[in-house]
Length: 231
Image (cartoon, rainbow, N blue to C red; front, top):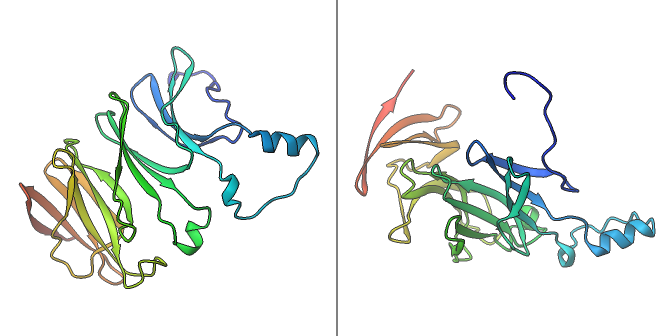
């Protein structure tokens, strides 16, 4: 209660909450791990504190939940057996993109790419995206009208190992179920700050050495125009 009073606990996950986002005044989308497995429970009973490094066989699922504050109920949204490590909720709160880690070593060797899913929360349907093993999307940004979303992809000469490269912008059209590159007209691609969507386009931070170049892009159908931002 913003008017005063102490906060109260609403979750009881053994391993805490990894991430969350408000859906409305009453519902919260939560990313968390399931409770302790039988293997973990048995190890605790035996007082076995062994830590297995990079234990692919026992990679623990991290799933999405929706918590209803008034009903004090937690609804499991996904039943995935892999590990969701990131999600992006649409502005209308009807769709969510998940990035599902497939390998406990991906952060180190980049060998087995994550899987990406588009979940329709109302219809309870799931569609896998970007199945090309060399195409590894990164940051996701929903368009303000929720008809699609922007995302970045790194161009590199070493796709297998996720070598260094330049980040470029793409747009996924939900109706066409396809994506296309957004013409930034800048050979160096995006800087680490990425983009900030607006109702009629986006603001982009472009890679430009020590000082990023900032442009305001305006969407006109499949085309874009831009103006430089200085200050």
